[in-house]
Structure formats: structure tokens, C-alpha cells
Length: 564
Image 1: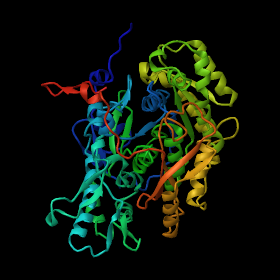
Image 2: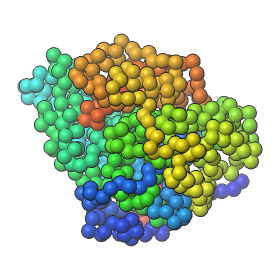
Image 3: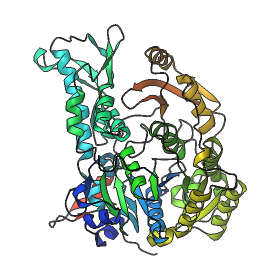
Image 4: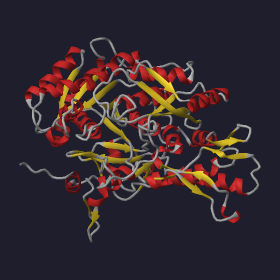
């Protein structure tokens, strides 16, 4: 059996360019850089504010994830490298990994094989400290809130109606539901509380959607932390918190510049989860990549029903962006898993199972082309076990929809393995598809003037292909309250399992005859959207029996092992 180098071994063998050289290749002068060692830097956020974001925007998304893996970030990196090999001025705009998944199930999240961003150990761990700053700003607001209640509660906050939680950047189920403030009067007011993971914090969403320090402060000030005894919202501004929070975030707000294994400039900045938040990197990083490059490759988390939907319906709506092309990543292995094959048997050719799993891919493709009216190409992330018959079947089914398929071999070959995909993407960006779809034909899945319930129903029916939505009584009450408070015009951020189009993780493929259950609706007023929690989705994950942390170690010379 063939043996392959691990991702971290490949990354550690790479001879990285000094980050000043990467910046120079991207047209960034050294005086705009703030160095974090030799291979990382932050960029002055005002440097390019007057430069138009003229580059073509390419969104990389995927089928619903499976234990077999899809390789969305890997494909994004390899595509950018492939575009550079074609002579195109391409940039990457990616999300930062969260420590929770890094030490949990997933392991590293900086790409894989010969399509990675480096230094991958730094990116996967503390990087430049952005997430720590976000967590500190979040928890400062929590501390100010509880201090206000402790010191007289002038705002008349009902402790039973506090919605703001503390956060930690780790999967820690023990902190989901807690009681704090115990120990007597000097130690606070006892109340039920809980933690979210940092990436689920509204501060993370605000951080990724802010366009300036001023915009950041205004958004932070609008955060609703709870309600009074009269059900009036209490904001961070009411607590005089936004200035101090912004002070903690001022450095983090500057996009991070790193490189791929092949030296392609990459902005890695921000990282909300797409199953419980909007799942995209920062608007600042995306616009910076579009201002500096002719092509900007970016990604959105999990499957297209989550990441792409939120990228298109939330980020593009709020930032005024229009993608020129969309890449939907799939693997033959993952499609066979959707078709009912166990992970242990995925290496065996199984055309019947592949055909049974293909509707998952085809539904994502149809959503991109028919709901959002964007041109699309399917990238098959190649595995050595894929057979010609399996690859031919995927291509044939996609061509029936008028969508091209490109075999992506970037894991094994880097940019060279992404040339076929790069060719397809360039053609779509320059000419649109055969049906006339382009950035100019882009439409949202719902319009602003719908009610909150109607927006949720539009996503459920048009994107998930559900029969309808069941709103639990608590959710109905919350929707009525939010609309009465003037939040009804906001887009909706769906919190849903990533494993299925439905809110039931066991329903693989392209399920039909199901409803979406909405149990809670809350406002992220600073971010500018309403969050609908469906099914049993949680905003604080947990670690499994054998987390990735068990394999991670550091040697005497500081070399990290086992990261992925």
C-alpha cells in the first residue's frame, strides 16, 4: 500500500518566501506591513480603501460534508495556484481555523497535501491572535453586563432575559449550560448562563462584516445583550462597551497576509462557523484580495446549503459583492457515502451507490445555477481509489445539467493539478456559462421586504427543498417580538446541521418529504442579521472519544507534530 507524507510534513519541507517578498509580488509596499515573524504580516486597513475591488470573485463551496472528506480549502488553494500558473494575478481570501476543530475531529484546516497555506502550524494554532482578541472583546462585554447588574442595575435588566454569553475558542460541552454568580452578594447575581465557542460569537460575525474602525464600533454598539423587565432591548452601547471592545479588536481587524506552498499571496482572516454563523472570511480581506488581484478565490464553510447560501444571501447582500463563478467541490468517496456506503468500504468501486449519492451534488449545483443564477463548475477532488467509470458517471450527470466538471488533482500535484479547474473558472469569469449566467444575473434566494418567517421559509423550500417550516411556539413569539422591535428587515442566518439539507444529520443525499423545525430565533443586531436555530444544532461543540489533540505534540526544538 502506498504511503503519503502528512500535511504537516509537506508544509515543514516547504521553503517559504519572506513575507515582504510575497507582499511585493502582490503590489503591497513594505511600509504597509506589520510583521508577525518572517512569514506572517498584517496589512494597514486604510491602505487600499480608495482602490477599487475590480478583481473577479470566485466562490468555492462543496457538497454536504461526510467523514470521507471533500477538500474545499485544499481545492481553493490549488485553484489559486493553478490560476497563477496560467499567468493570472490570483489571490486567496480564506478563513482562520478555530482551535476547537483543530483539537477535535477535523485536525488542521489550512488545506492539504501540496495545496496548503503556510506556515500551517501557526495558522492552525494561535496565528496572529485574532481569535483571542475576539474572545476578549466578547467577554469584556459579558463582564460589563454583569458588573452593571451587580452595581444597581440602572438599566432594569431582567437576568432571566440575558442573551449574551461568554465564549472560549475550544470545544467544551461542559460549558454549554452553567449556573454562575454563586457564593453570596460579593460574587455577583446568580443566574443560568453558558458559553459559546468563539467562532459563534456575534463579535466574530461583526469582525468579518465590518468595513472600518468606525463601522466596527457602530456594529458593536448595536449588539443586543438582553432585555429589560418591560422587554425593551439592552445594547452594548447602553453599557458604554463598544469603544473598549473596539480597542481590543483594532489590530485584529487588519487582514493577515501569508502564502501558499507555491508562494501565492493569501489573506487568512476571520472564521465564523457556517453551521451556526455566516461562515465567511472578512469583507476587508476579500475586498483587499479583489483590489490587488485580477482573481480572488474565496471559500464559505461546510456545504453550499450553509456556507454558499450565507455568503450569497448575507455577505454579498451586506457588502455589495457579486461572484463571477462558483466552484462546487465533491469527491467520489463522499458521494458514495451519501449513497449509503460505509466509510470503511469507500475505496471499492460502487457505481450504484455513487448514483444514489449524486443527487446531493446535483441539488447544490441546481441551487447555484437556478436559485442564485450564477455560473458553476464542479470540481472532483481526486483520490487514488477513484475509477474511470466513477469519474465518467459524475461528469455525465453534471453535463445533463449543463455544468462542466473538472478533475482537481491539487492534493497530489499542487497548482499543476489545478490547471484544468483554473481553465474552466477563467472561462466562466470572462464569458459566463452557456445559459448566459454571470455576475450580472446574480439573484438572492429571498428579498429584503419579506417577513422573518417568509425568509426562513424561502431558504427552507428553495435551498433545502423542504416541504415547509415548523415554528415552535417560542420561535413564533420571538419572531413577533423582533419584528415589533424593527429587526424584520434583516437577512436570516440559519443555524443547521452541516451534514444534511434537512435539520436531521442522518438524512443524507437529497432528502424529500421533510420539514425544517425552528426552535429559536434571535437577533444579531450588530452583525445585521437574524439567527434561526433549527433542529438540535448547538453553538458549543464537544470533543469526541479520540480527539485530534491526542496526536499533537511538540519536539524539543519546537517542531510540532501530528497536527494533520
